[in-house]
Length: 98
Image (cartoon, rainbow, N blue to C red; front, side, top):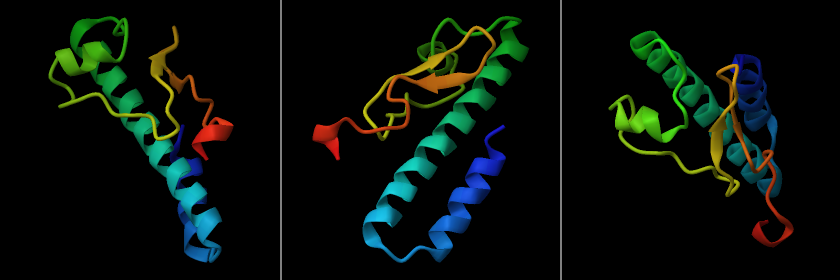
């Protein structure tokens, strides 16, 4: 359930003035919103086809999304066996990407 994280990040963005922290919060929020959308699309796919997609690209192939979103941290999104979507980036930039 991503809603609490989304709410918290939006609240932090409203009250944070440090530009560096604002940028970090915006990147985190963008990523959480993508994960939230992808999990909804995985659920939609499962309802349509009776199974989880093998990978995220099947959601695009099934015309449930126009294109594959990029992970703002540079990782790759993947689907766990329980239908949850995660990213290889672990929501962190590598030191060279900061």
